[in-house]
Amino acid sequence: MPSLLRLGGVVALAAGLAAQAPPAATIRLPLQQATLANGLRVILSPDSSAPTVSLCLTYDVGSRNERRGHTGLAHLFEHLMYEGTPQVPKGEFFRLISTYGANLNGTTNQDRTNYFETLPANQLDLGLYLEADRMRSLPLGISQAKLDDERQAVEEERRLRTDNVAYGRSDELVAELAYDTFGYQHPVVGSMADLKAASLADVVAFFKTYYAPNNCVLTLVGDFEPGAALARVKQYFGDIPPQAAPPAVDMSEPPQRQERRQTVTDAFARLPRIVLAYRIPDGNAPDWYALNVLGDILTRGRASRLSRTLVQDQHLALTVSANPTQMRGPGLFEIEAMLRPGKKMADLERGIEEGVAQVAAAGVSQAEVDRAVMLDYTDILSSLRGTLDRAVSMGTYAVYFHQPELVYSVYDRFRAVTPQEVQRVAKQYFAANNRTVVVTLPAPAMGGKP
Image 1 (cartoon, rainbow, N blue to C red):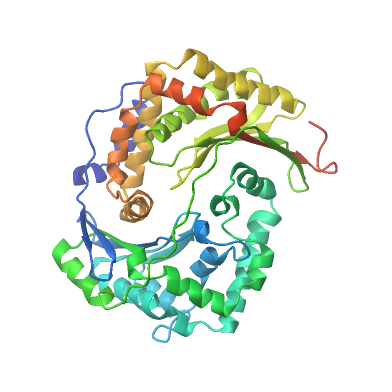
Image 2 (image 1 turned 90 degrees about the vertical axis):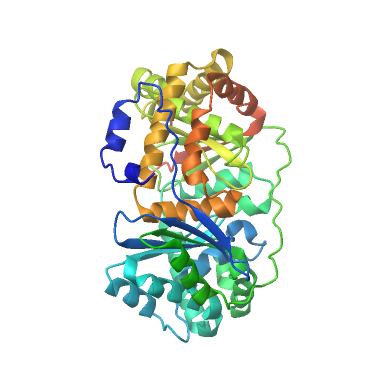
């Protein structure tokens, strides 16, 4: 619905209507799909509101695909993809893109790796050429020296974002305890030991396994004619040979039978923190949408239940949040709260449990559900305003669930959530034997006892 994307005031208007029922209008965007002979999936979504085009390549590889002793390769490759090829030496990718005022980046998570650019519409060929070039020939440009450089960069990133920051180790510990299968159990950045042990042969083998057209989705959103754009995609990518399908990843989790709990001391933390993580289904299951609405009802905004009771009334917490992770496999519903100085962690944990138990026992109102869905509606509208956000989301949904149209139809799924479903998922998933609890305490020199 192009007119929706041009209305800058729509989000503010929707936010102002948060107390009313969500709008019934269904969001729709133009979307065409094709698959090349080599297996490359292509998604085209034209939008002529600005003379730009966003290009996103989403590879079906994340840390879930890694093996024990070889962690961190997916994220390491995100760095290596900018190391240059025989045709486009190191630094030229950035120089060519920035020459036209464009931007680029790449990200890695548990379930996928993506690379994206926003370019002037008349430079689509440049973006397609650069991405096809490194899909075709990147290993030819990787040397031991380049691998060592990027390995050091990733090691430093781990120090800055995990090892030497408050709650960094605690965040990793939640997944380690909550999951039994290795794919989601280990961190995306990998371990220092595995990063140091990665060889050039490991890197080349990883590329040949996962960086192939039949393991990738290419998404274009912006000012182009679909037929002409698809022809150009075929021109640049059509002769890249496919590879054997990567090994399947088993992400199934055995049922959790009892609570898992650990308390850690953190030299960088200033305040005690608690995280309660409950096992939930994948990020496109019907229950996931009800759980997302429940998270909004519990902690989103000052009017939410736990924010009102734990932060404003009882003064037990400084902050509290509750959200389900959106994963291809089993996810976690994480409730995180920061203890207010002078209060007891046991009281805060009890307050969280009582708030969740109240939903399971007495349910929620239609007004609460409507408010939550309206907040989600504003989020969806915000995410659809930019061509890059749409390209990234379409590619992600295509790789995760083979449904790129979720970028807009997700709203219909939120609107279908009822108060009865919210109460049911609270009963079903928020049991003590289905949770992992990680409590982080400041080191004695950094603060007192909770």
